[in-house]
Length: 392
Ligand SMILES: C[S@@+](CC[C@H](N)C(=O)[O-])C[C@H]1O[C@@H](n2cnc3c(N)ncnc32)[C@H](O)[C@@H]1O
Image (cartoon, rainbow, N blue to C red):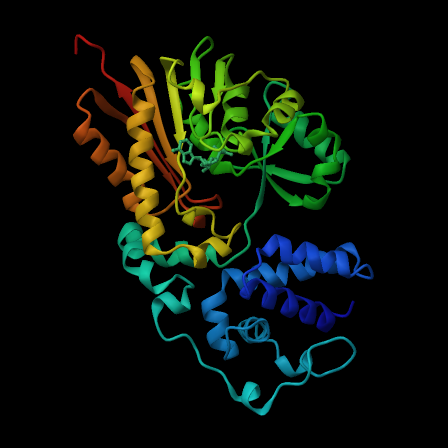
């Protein structure tokens, strides 16, 4: 496919997404219909689509319309490419620019529009991040790096780097966590590599790994991953110590791949169905990787940025505080409750923990950590709380 034909394909996929389809569904539908497209074409179309979704507001302004065509036009203008070189009706590329499209060049007017944050959230986003708000929003407009976690049950970091190199995947250590690697070349080969299929590495953002590093895990502890989802944190915890480890999620089907992943990693994780939670515990440590706005990972899932609204954010905060209360009851005296989100919004993070501490006097804050997107990871927050001993 020519570069212009790839843009036209992205326009069609974006129109489907703007009509309500999920990005992955629209992209896989296009791939199925486009047998002529090679792997480089698919990757390029995907990149165009995700760039447009990350920068949806500013590119719509620059392109004059919130349509696939407007977004792609806006992205060319931001990149300093003359749109007429692509929108020229040649081959399978986009048809020529109309007079109106040729003229439209509205630069974003507000901070929120320029930085691609929804208006309703801008005040809270900027208050939460203070001087870091602009850098965070800017980082969220760009593609996320690919990170791997080296499974210390299977290998060392140096050995994993060598193994990956043999499969054409070049990595370097990431400063955020001692198990974290950043992939600099060959990311598309990961899933077929020997290191991945044999459980030496897992795909996981470095901040997710850092959250697990911040937990005081020791051999012999009983641990519950209360919001386990696909089990990324469970697997990372299992690799750090010999634990009696349980995974729970209110939607157990989200954990369906966890047994296979645990097998590949050579670790044991027991799935705990919601109906068995009441009789379980107490645990030495409970991790709540709570459902949240996902604002720290919007560069990976940019649709979330535009789908979230104020009502949903409020509902998420209510769920977060209920989760804290329920999970706290499962922790043994002297044990640890860890609360984490991939959000950069203060009311989902430190404020939740402050409110919890105000209503639960037997808890104290042991440590608090946050990771910023502009430092090369997803945005994350984690608080580690300790249940005071009875005689305190
Ligand atoms: C941020 S995701 C977890 C990601 C996962 N820990 C990982 O590292 O891959 C949050 C999870 O919380 C679950 N969840 C939502 N409400 C819950 C609740 N009230 N109790 C337990 N889990 C809940 C969701 O189904 C979702 O899988």
